[in-house]
Amino acid sequence: MECPAPVADRGPAAGGECRGVVVRGGLSRVAVVIRVDISDPADPRLADFRDLKRADRRPDRPGGRGLVIAEGTVVVRRLIASRYPLRALLGVPRRYHELTEEPAGELADQPVPFYVADAETMAATVGFHLNRGVLATADRVAFPPAADLLAEGRRVAVLEGIGDHENMGAIFRNAAALGIDAVLLAGGCADPLYRRSVRVSMGNVLSVPFAPIAELGSGGSDLLHANGYHIIALTPRPDAVALAELGLPPAQRVAILLGSEGPGLTEFALAAADVRARIPMTPGVDSLNVATAGAIAFAALAPSP
Image 1 (cartoon, rainbow, N blue to C red):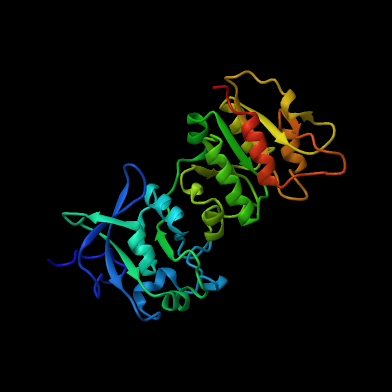
Image 2 (image 1 turned 120 degrees about the vertical axis):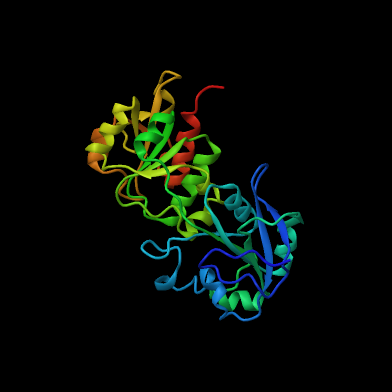
């Protein structure tokens, strides 16, 4: 049996087993992969994974190749289960055997290469020792624009100035866990699909729709109001209403505004909100991490079962 031709820039799927096996990403999503054994870290087929430590060569950098990179078996499975088109996997033999299941039967037209290398070869390729032992890459996709996500949703998070990738990933993890329908990104936000954000989110960023939105205080707040959203600005200011005292109708659409660590929301965003809400805290503690504060607000404003 001949190996099917690979996608144009993946390189030939030769040098390993020409046999398709299944990697399961969820109850209904699987990927068919072909094992390709690799011993040379300079092999051109590993271009998706090379020099991940060097910021100027990162394939997931904004303005770069724009790849989505997943680390570890849990996040790789979530990538496979997502809408992002899988490109390739790279892992040590143990991770290959953990992830792969039964033979795939008839091979797909475009099976995905699963490059298998020892830990030293993998470390030399990516630029550091990867404890999780497996990586996967995928192409990005575009979600619907903010207006469409607002029309379909009931509860959204709107982020302003969230420039830290770990905070961004943690917010998406909380949003997925606590039923936020979409995340909208105003000015100054980090890329949610940056490798660190994907890792910290445990891959949940791959399942939560997101889109840019115009600056709050101008077109962004107008769009929220036009779709019937009550805008709640989360702030530690003492004049804000306690979160538990908002008393919103159960069917009310809500947009929860979260600002950057330190400065918080801009005055424009605060002025655009319908209400400012705070999380009561012990005296002497002035604020919470933004992802923690977001999780509390997401849970407090969840619709009643």
